[in-house]
Length: 366
Image (cartoon, rainbow, N blue to C red):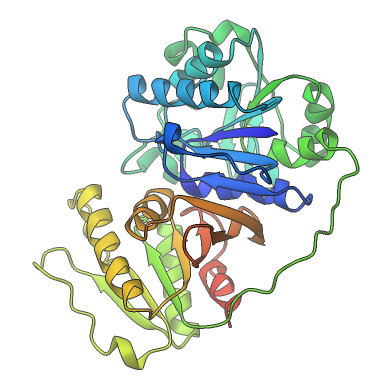
């Protein structure tokens, strides 16, 4: 079995699609309460969501170390530590947890994902041509990126930084070269881009065209808790181009009113603009309660969720503990099927995609 550790739920889908596309039965464990999880025999790739991107460094360290301990008891022969391609989160402390939990002596590190505009040159990380510290991720409400030079970031955050080799990478060919160099190692750390190349080298008799299951057609509930300008632009295009009930939530009010929900085939729920002062926890709890109510009465089984925090809270509210990854809807965007309950879930990272991304996700269910 291959094990993957990721720090947020949409990141699990982001990397999971590459394993699923190779014909491997790929499962995401949503909740980091790992000891309660019974491994299914059919699982070939187990992705553990530690949900640690916004945790303290100490808590993130412990979650990753626990995930490594889990893998040690279930015949995992290779582990990929997935990181955010914009360098958000507790990268250094999670690498420490990875070293201390797995016992590895060396770790290759590649944060680049050239297909998504993320590249590393001379140790400095760029997003769409800008230093990551000059991009929108420097202003991320929960995880602002303050260091673009990866070796410096690791020296500040990790006691094992001298055992980490940081790779420069600017093209798809660079990724292939790095994959060939690191494929024989028991542990690798990077964004999803490197995993796409590694899986081609890790698996014998790989099946690149697995049989696809058609998505269930029906009404769609789109949920976003992301404050990303990219996501807001995608919502604007969605409501302009699709027959969908538009529900911007005004948190200055004490309640959310959804008028005429039964007369609309689909719905999009998200925080209204100009609510920067509202705490993220309040937004997440509100969205989770609304989704639980809307899905509880049987209105929706098809969900499109933008943002990792949103996805984790919504899945928790619906009682979903594990997701089977099916395929990519768009680059970095996975469609999954609930294992405990019959929900079809598209996981979209908040910052991924062009203005049509949410619209294209909804079309899957039409």
